[in-house]
Length: 432
Image 1 (tube, rainbow, N blue to C red):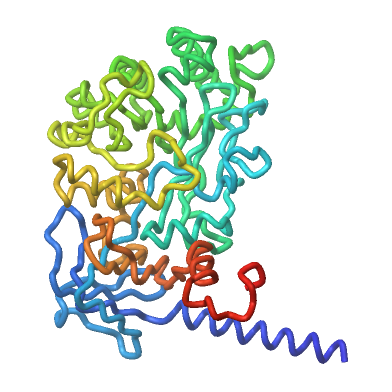
Image 2 (image 1 turned 135 degrees about the vertical axis):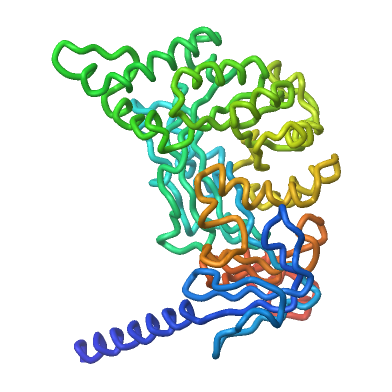
């Protein structure tokens, strides 16, 4: 009987896998919608997007795109169809309760290592925050660490919001350095101390492994951290410098000017508009929250909601995200609201939408795979019931890697459970 039961279980599992594979392999055609295939280009008013096996096959006006035989057709008439949103600074899936250290993997305040830390190892694809995030159209995120005892926060990653076990798109996709006031505090209390410490750290890494063998002597790094910095020094991984004050940004530009292989990205950048020309000339991107217009600290006295429009006018590459880090564990879902506020403050709609789709993908070196709807790219596709940058709009369908994902969240389940229409339910509320 036991063998028979085991065999039945195996047959059921095989059938389930086959059904899942079939669903994944099913070609899909989203037709009749307003296709925003690239925020920087005019949309297609009545277009079709076809994808299969996780990749986009074709995009174009309806009637000009061949729909494969047997494809599932999704009617998007009267709706908007866009690439999935990409939050390039978040900690979604890394903390269930920010104040509870046991459930928070964003920072290791007392760890002996710094550069060697790999945040992707703490990502939980089954976190309750993920369904809430993808229900608002966010399909990819960059998980960014918080620096602990030193200026070096370690490596962040890129992941999809599917909730699947294998949802890491790219581990070690970025590296964080805390600069400005945060870096000064960690280095001993001043900006000169932070500059000296980081220069010493770079020197240790540049002298690896000689500084850690024989009579060699390292200044500030452990061997594992110096080794971990090698891809950063080679320019294979971009560095997020979390910095706000204009003079601190200038210091970053001077420091990386000595090491031209480095790929700096300014994160936060409350006063980035002050040095916009220098950033544009150095081709250094900025990742910022367009909302702050009042100083949260002395390093952001120049905060203004015109920051993003002034960067755009100067030709600076930028992306929009919760770059201040406030509620970064939970609020990636507000990404379209941030972009919409940027539009309200003078940024063009196309530039704002690109700042939450194609720009973050390009800044992180994934522009060839994500960020726009184009043949060959990963099929992260969202169907909206209206303009995605309007607060009243919501996704009606979300596809990640070409597979439709559910829009049910803990909040929607609670809403349905206690909705007034269930007032006649014989069970009391506590037992529903």
